[in-house]
Image (cartoon, rainbow, N blue to C red; front, top):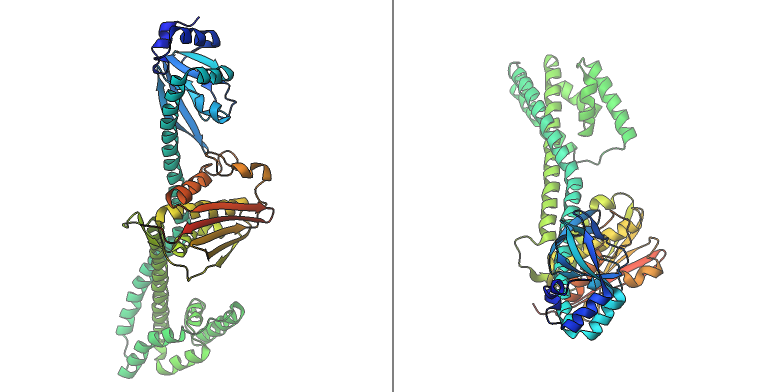
Length: 463
């Protein structure tokens, strides 16, 4: 039989009489654990309520594919009441850190205890409130880390191409300018009239202006390159086939080449044309570097807009700006075969909101829609005014949410995804941000080929 003195040391039982303690001893049992031995497993049926009489327990929970530390239970700690009260399986795992002695009560006896011992009921309610706060804080922090991971993955994908292109262009530009200096020296050593020098000096500008024309299709461009290369060979220019591609891309054809031949000395023609080709190549590479750095700059701006960096937590926001910055972050996933249609009502007013948290909602809903379709399908994003609310709809034509799990879709820790896929927290977080933080509403409708999440945010919210 359990020692009454051991039960009296537990804060939960401190106010019980000897008779009540005898009742616990009659209906309960003892459990002894060795170090590293597992007591309960997350997801298993919650059949027992426990009190740790002596020892120490390590409490963990799975978030996605990772098991995270939640808490350490010391002597006198009671646990297991929440899943029994909610008719849920155990919400976490418990392992013994050292030899541990526990008091165990079956769930039917647990309900009897709550009925007959009001002091225990009051104490358990306080403990539950504290634990729910811990779990909520952990889930929010984990969800923010997941959002940060999504953000980082999107940036890595989106920045990789322009960064690589800019680096490649910079290296080629370095090589081009080294060769350009050499040919510039050769031209300075050759005897030419002022008119010839002036004509040569105007060649890059003339080529740049021609380059503004619409590019030819690949077949026509290939034919033009062959024609220019043949002309260069006829005029005795070495490696003419290397120069032809750059000239044609710049809009320079065989007729232009004839004009150059007329005004440039024959013995200088090869050096002049090679110098021009390297100059044009350098201009193209500079344009590529400019385009790449602008793309990176645009991505950095999107990140600042997404996170509302250096801005007040709550302010007037345009939901379209948040949606667009979110789509920029998720652009690498949209490229895989997802078609996107925007139907925005640009006349919608700005609303007072927590911008970064709302972007977390858009990230979860759009990312879920992409995953639901396995990366192949159609997404519609609509905005409109509904009475005194801004309505945002995110719709996909995926397989839909099974009817049997729809009532649970906003439950904490519930997920429709397999182990290691998704966060399992997104929709619960979305619900708390929209309803709890913004006093709005989030709902959904789902059937095969039509799943739509609707977020309503009040327009006249007080800052």
